[in-house]
Length: 556
Image (cartoon, rainbow, N blue to C red):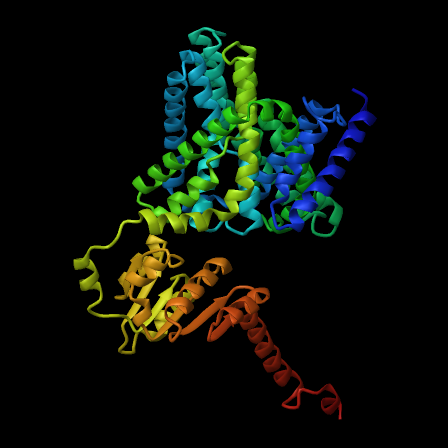
């Protein structure tokens, strides 16, 4: 197709996405819904046919997902990835296997043949990296427990794309067993070699460019960012690995360099454009006329998939020891069908494993699930709260009576560096101190100090009630994530307005939120840093120019 035709279609799609996405944003809805709707109306079957380059735009837009993972990787060092723990990764493997099994059983009960039933299970087992991570990053929820869980599961699913693609090929009857085993071995070897190459090239590039001109030439940072992100995606695709996963690894390795913050900012504009094209291209896959004609069937399939995946993920993470609230919030985030279902479906359709009708149904259900996820994911925490109140396991009366024998004087929520400093200043006082934190290592450290400490999500009212926060004298909230800290403060103000509250604010931009919520004392990280700098500067001025701090008097 002519280059200028493709460019025209891109401009038309971006313009429509701007208009419809802006309209949805105006009414406080996710603009992603607008991007999907714009693509559905402009291109593909049953649309206005204003865009003819659907396949070309889809190929270009896939780079947006890769850059999204690359940007996320820049925020994750290897040590931080380890801190995610094994639970999200174990949960991801368990979820993929359990969803394939559930899809197989459901499709078989509907009368489909075994091969097609397995293929359907594989297609619906994956969630949408683009939808979920985009929304969680926009809402600053990646640091929250359900955000960490979602990231771990999505990374596991990205790693599962290649084995699932091979599974679809096997179901199609292409290739002998020995050839398939060789392909798997080759992919694993090439993936390992690719990671090693990323490590070496990352060290060489950062060292060489940092020593030479990267810090003095602004444009070189941009070129280096795009070269690294897109180059990693291309290299991964060339060896048969998920481009998004390869881009994440490259970004993670680069995340420990001094240029990570700047590179993340440089990639952001291109990432936004490509992701907008991705959602528009995803919308063009659907046939609105087919969806309307078969609305009852699509609605039934979407409902079964959303509820089925939610229940599966909920059960897995509860079994892994997480609370009902976090498990349900994670399930809400990951309940949709992912964009890789289109890829697996295309392989299955080419191998006559999946019929045209089944492919159309799964693709249409995926698009509808995208729409619903743009509405549900921002409300995942709220839905988790509701589920915890409805299904959460209560505390026995004996446990409640025992825990309430000695209410704490001071409750410290969050036992990071700030919480530890507060606790250290209270050690020589005759006070009962309670620590609440979700991090087991932090709880262990608090217990080593001789403090009463419990693992609990303080944004959940039941946890605060069980910890007898309402009977304490003062609550110190040191959680760095402002939305979580604000949720804790709102719970305390609603149920125990008499308690003196001291809140740590990481950024001054959020100070007014805590003032409105009723915090008694607010201390900001930026304010303390400024005061410390000011004290140092005053001391230096006095030492240099005398007590008057005046150059004029010094000259006199």
